[in-house]
Length: 348
Ligand code: NAD
Ligand code: IPM
Ligand code: MN
Image (cartoon, rainbow, N blue to C red; front, side, top):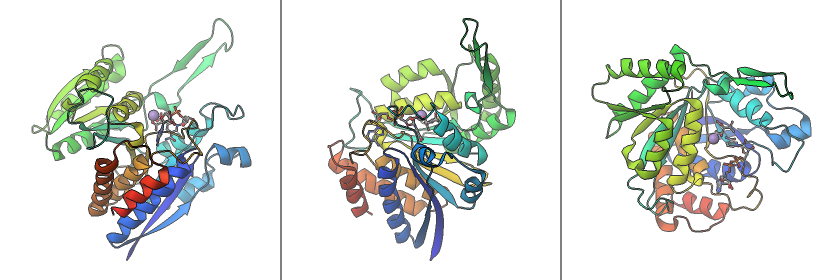
């Protein structure tokens, strides 16, 4: 039996609730494929910070690097707790991991499963993947505030986009599109206003497109993309976009596909120079935490993305089929986290 050595970061709020189910399902599916899962839990998040004063230490980062992959729940403080500065935990843990382990692909598939209820009256056949950039753009924390608190304050957030980063992102998206049935790739940006970053994206996209004559392409400004995602989401196959646009579009993509509770995410280092990290798209959901009602299917599907990334396609599709069966049987019925977890587990 081969061993899968995984780091598990349950985090805060509903993070631990959904991660427990995801790990159980992943362990069973891996077991069926002859793999033994060896999990190491790391206590990281707002709760841990309040207890210890530490976010992600260099020691923990070095230790996390030794695992084959990371299963991540969610981090983020309850906004009712005024002790945690806004975004501190997210930046110092989640974003630090994405940057340190070079997770330049933030992969976010959306499907309208049979049984899932879309808020759209005519959703059509939703089955697309957003390839969101993961380590650049406005997320790099490049900027500052001068004359803070005065009426002359100036706050800047400088988006950083490199030729290397945009090239490897767009190549990955073309490869993915070429591997899918419809072979269509859409670039989403806003090059009418963001001329510098948008120009780099557009030139890179057009250049690489020459190497993929089998992939059809189009370009949509991000504002219009939100229209089509509401009126005609079935038109999308693969979307490639910048870090912030991808963040926003994928919450919308989750919502139209029946809910953010089914949306999974892979933070992928496609060069395999560090472990990739898999998580639900959603956050710690303080509004429902502790009640045992969070939907664990996004976290469970993240486990499938993890197995696929490590080359265990059969185990990955086993999980996806079990979720699909559960969705067909129960859809959006009100069930507890544990009930959903048990039902999916029984389908493995
Ligand atoms: P959220 O995704 O946590 O919640 C948004 C809404 O979706 C809430 O109404 C919540 O109840 C609902 N929801 C989310 N997941 C659900 C699930 N599995 N089942 C059912 N309903 C679900 O976003 P937010 O409220 O903006 O953020 C809460 C905290 O999480 C913040 O601190 C934020 O920074 C953090 N956050 C962390 C991550 C992460 O760790 N990857 C991602 C997003 C937000
Ligand atoms: C996500 C989250 C994060 C992001 C936050 C918590 C930093 O919203 O994973 O989508 O903006 O990337
Ligand atoms: Mn987000």
